[in-house]
Amino acid sequence: MKWKTSKLRFYILNALWNYKFWLFAEKKFKEHVYEVNEEEFNLDNLDVTGKMLYKKTKVFQRRFIGYMYNGLLHLDNPGFKHTVDKESWTAWKNKGLIK
Image (cartoon, rainbow, N blue to C red; front, top):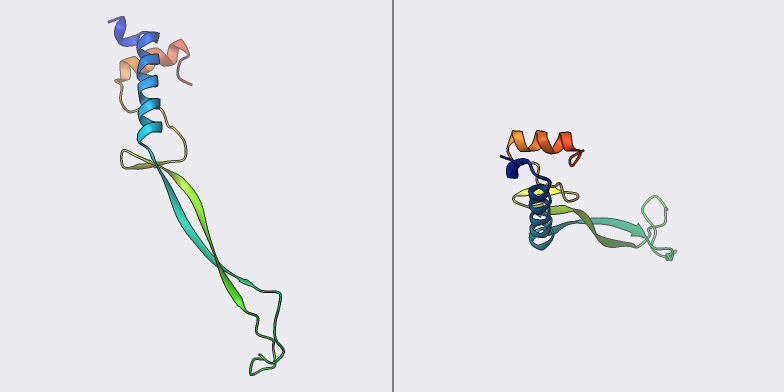
């Protein structure tokens, strides 16, 4: 019974979770596309109403959205909170290992 709630077991499980997370988590990105007006324009290229038409260039950016691990998307390493029983978790919480 002592092994189940020991600090050594907590540190071993935590280390195993962290290594698995950082080795097998995939970074996920989302492409963000927007248009930017160029500074140069041509006066020959006018709209029907007489307004100047600017050339527009598309800008593509990849934005980080999170780490995909075990079918869930995480912004950071969440820890192994779902892999232990309630008795161990409460004992580790009382010992101050889990905040």
